[in-house]
Image 1 (cartoon, protein in one colour):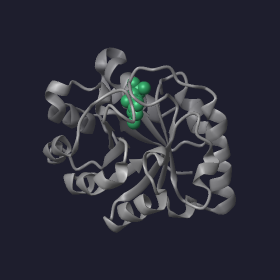
Image 2: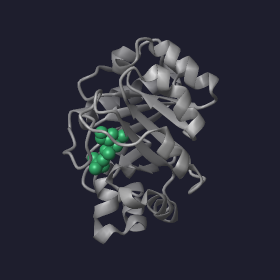
Image 3: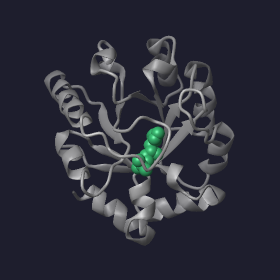
Image 4: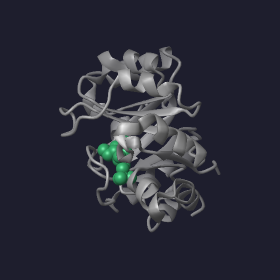
Length: 219
Ligand code: DX5
Ligand code: ZN
């Protein structure tokens, strides 16, 4: 059983002090930093791009788990690799050719992530699974932090775990959106080994990041 990892989303951080917020996450024993990149087209919100990621790179040695919620994502992948991303996660709906995007991320020596929206079927990944390092299951419709967890995704996580075990694939299963202290155990038991959380980590227990990360991890 893989160790449960926590990837706090900086979407819920204080954007006026992102560097310090990343240091706080590292001190709070985060395993990686989830960076939500949004372009206002693929999702109805706009956040940060490669310039900001480059500026944040030297604040931590932790891996940058970069979630690209941007249209025509293929042509921007290299920029995020050069900015310091360690995991580059794309949405199949946002690239003209998923194979090409996966091969490009691989060629840039980054970990390959593919994200599925709540209404996207796992079957869209048929044939790609052996070449993917991480599958990001969205448990909210992407665009904003603080949304309510969609319980239907539990079955999707279980199905993905079955496929992974039957075929001895080694991809991580990461779940993202509305993760909190009351659903994290169920998400882990369904098969997730990486949890993304923004609101719970930054807001619960008066913003005690270390306590919130530990509580999520130890469910
Ligand atoms: C939503 C983002 C998520 C979100 C998670 O589009 O992809 O990473 O920030 O935030 P919470 O934990 O607040 O739902
Ligand atoms: Zn995300």
